[in-house]
Each structure stands twice: as structure tokens, then as C-alpha cells.
Image (cartoon, rainbow, N blue to C red; front, side, top):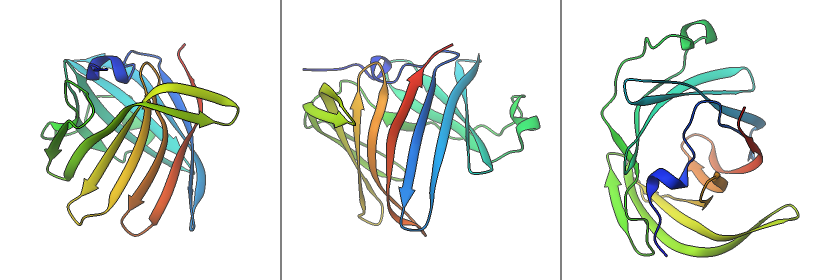
Length: 172
């Protein structure tokens, strides 16, 4: 089974996700919402535990982050953020065994037919994406087409191992 990156993560204004972030040091809820589209980029606002950030996504055939920052909410409503180099996140075609890299590490599609359970719901045909950072630490993401990340087992510098679990998804 093959997927297109543009179909994996639903990028449109109003799409939102809520995640439970858990580590041995820190637990919080993180909310993400796509609030704007301009200049071929989607603006995503992230908030949780008193912190707020912003990212810009570009989704043509592949998915890229093209800018990001930690800003006060009043500034996030504008497009005043420096453009970053395009950072490739998902590359077509998304098939088992496919791999690609960016400046931070290497991605590899481990599976595209994985059955994943979140609470009492089972998701079939999930993508398992492994990211190995430049220091050799692995993070795994379980992704459902049309929803995005269901679960992530992450390694974050200065925090260590953490998890990211989808609590809510929708659009308005």
C-alpha cells in the first residue's frame, strides 16, 4: 500500500489536534490548530502548559516545515516569523522501506499496514515512521491517513524518552 504525504496529515484551516504529552519529568496537554494559509504555507499554532509556539507547513506532494518559533500569542496572529530552510518531514511515496533525511536525521517507513489501538478504538492500516536523530536516538510515530499522528514514542534532548498520545482531532 502506498500513501501520498499530502493525504496523510490533513492540512486545512481549522484542523486541530489535542495530545497528551508524558515524560518522567513533565506531563501536559498540547493543542495544535491550523489557523491560516498564506504564501503556500499553513500556519499552525501550538499551545500547552503556558507555552505557545508557531510553525509553518508546506504541503505539495511532500510535507515540509518552513518556519517555526516560540512567540507570544499576540505576535502569532501575524506572519512575522523568519523563513527557515524547508525541512522535509514526509516524502512521497510513503511505502514500507522508504527512507529520506533532513538536517536533523533520517526517517524510515517501517510499516504501512500496522493495526494501532488508542483507548477503545482500533485504527487499521497505520503508518509506522521511525526517525533517528543525528545522535542515533530513535523516535517512532504511528500515523493514520486523514488524521495524522496517533501516538509517538519520542526521544527529546534534556527530557529523555516521552510519549505523545492523540486525545482529540477535528475541524471547525
